[in-house]
Amino acid sequence: SVTRSYYRNSVGGLLVFDLGNRKSFENVQQWYAEVSERVQPYTVLFVLVGHKKRAVDRTEAEKLASQLGAPYIEASAKTGHNVKEAFELLTRRVYQGIKSGEIHQKLSTYSPNTPEDTKQ
Image (cartoon, rainbow, N blue to C red; front, side):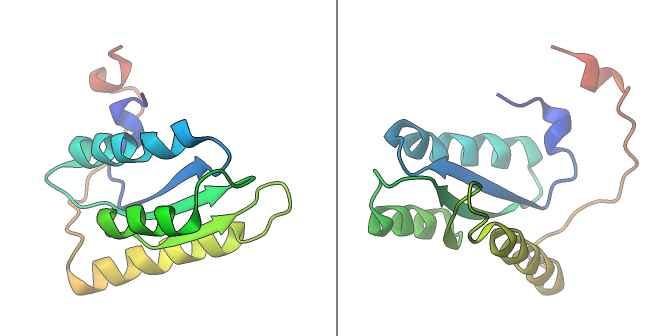
């Protein structure tokens, strides 16, 4: 579990799972819910990214992405295949979300030493 300070003012995120590890795929919905819950009432847009060797079928991953309202892309950190494209896809998605009004983010200043950030 990532602390709340990592989510503060987030407007987009990559949900990355290991194509060779079914458990990581099964955790995606939990990660999605955790981030979405912690940034409420604001919206975070996601891109679902599958990486490494295949144990999760592409069709299954695309179905989950559709349920989450997120585009899907497969990438490899090892070879660099689609890594840049995943970030570009997320950036375009966030830009369009801001432009369309889907993302309503309040402006705030961030100090890493606020009491909320130091809580365990």
